[in-house]
Length: 339
Image 1 (cartoon, helix red, strand yellow):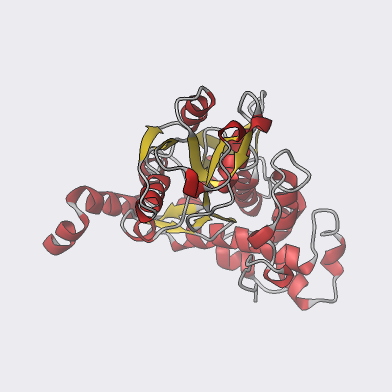
Image 2 (cartoon, rainbow, N blue to C red):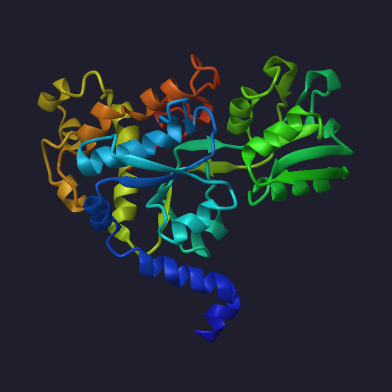
């Protein structure tokens, strides 16, 4: 035990133990209170963002809605907790939230030393840079000596330091805890560059005074697989969150959509019948009804529907599928089969 504490650091080891102890029966707790408490961003268009009436929407929000649909048969049974980058892991470890679905990068440290488990990847991303067009910069390699705005408590700080060091360039970090503080500082000219995940740059650009005056540079300097996170120590809840995402990806691959899922209840395809709960007992294995995936697809849609609705080419973000396309269509989005 002493070696473990020394290796992890006393505070980290205690948080791991607390997180593990706090998670026995998350699904039962969620059913008892009647809703999923989901940790989201403080406002990132396309991923997790609230409108003027407090209604949340986005690619990450759809994971929360999918979990609620699987558990309750009702995708609206979610309460949202907006969290900063600094607050998000503590909120999950402490049990304040049941799941974190907040543009969060899956890394070795986060997956092992914090008492947390990543349940999959719902968006493959990478860190980029945004600058004003007036600077005349076309490459990140021209950013030597720049002041760079970013968030504290994120992987971006380490990534940007590594990038500038590797390319023998000096820079100054201007960091803030809240994303809107970073956007505001960049918009007011307190820094030359804004760096975060490329998806975040496209989203935050919409908040700038003159969004068309800014460009995202072509360089991607890191791997940022983003996905939902749960506490370690509760495999049942971990499995449910994981298979909520997998069901949405599998549904897209099989051509099962929110519009046609009812007709798929009489499909001749055994894989489709397993997905919609007409064969097997996969819901029972997860601790929910066998119509769990049917409810996700009917109320939230498949992964492609969620992507197109929230961040796709016809949205203000205008993001192409790219690597987030299905593996069968040139991307790397892939889910294990339901069988």
